[in-house]
Length: 416
Image 1 (cartoon, rainbow, N blue to C red):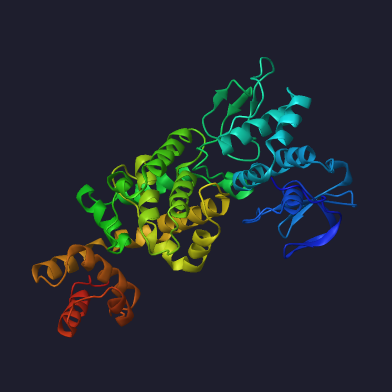
Image 2: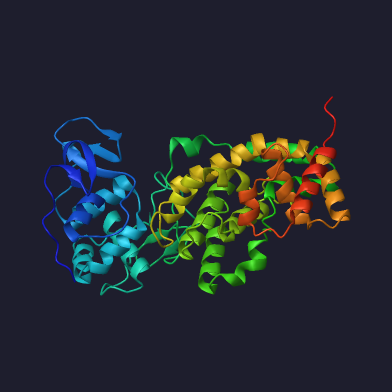
């Protein structure tokens, strides 16, 4: 096991991240420095300054001298759990280099301490190794995850540690989301109701056409129909997360955790890969977002933000991660879909039906390709962008492309 380096003193920069003032790393930052931990840094690190004023800026949480923890493993772990929430990937890395005796001595010294019990539980939960400690016989139960800082899952008591395991997932799959003012202000039921209003304004048999226009011909399918493409442990862990968060996470945040969690677990880095969007749409369907049974694709909006999308997909590996930015991203994309793309698609139904009928009757292309071409022509003034045709390896001849563009113009309803 790796011995620790001294905990760092006051510094002005930490692994390329500038501090807003000279301060001593605390909590996770101190543990990273002392134990040489690798991997993605937490979005916000903590440090203790000489100033008697707290602040959060530029990726740093600056605390006052009275918050300074003891310069020990227990001190910085306790500080992290108290002020920074759970970073499961970082804790897994730390526990991997620790001598188990370090945790055992910590628990023996304070067997009923709330933080030592949480550390003990987290060590055994993440590593799968049982420490040389007897089960506790007394003490009130404490939560493994602080629900004031992060959204929990359904709680199950761990009698051995006297800890309520309210982590939403498993050691193999457990994305966590911090409570932020931005996420707390979101009104997902209102957004769902708005989507339902738009969809219900169309005749029932035409509602799937709205989704088909937004789908852009990707041919997405339900995760439940395609989950055999995922490793069975991942599929089971994803289902466990879905069930555990039914009463604790809103629909969109759950969809973000599962969609991006599956992408990370399967090493997906290309936004064009549909596997994680299948998961997102399955969650929206199963949680009844919008109108039950009608798929509401978000691809058109999310793929317009391809740089942000790719950054979220490629930031780190594994399915123990901070999914807060992923949840914010999906909320923003879905809001734009419901407020802008969905009404626009609903208004385009008559034109789309006429265009699809003509292209199908003339056997120019399939229904899915027809939807893709229709949406691209809507965006490009009635013409098909040739780079798109090349990327899709389209087999349409020049005369067929010209005929399709003509049909788009001819089937467009007259402006009133």
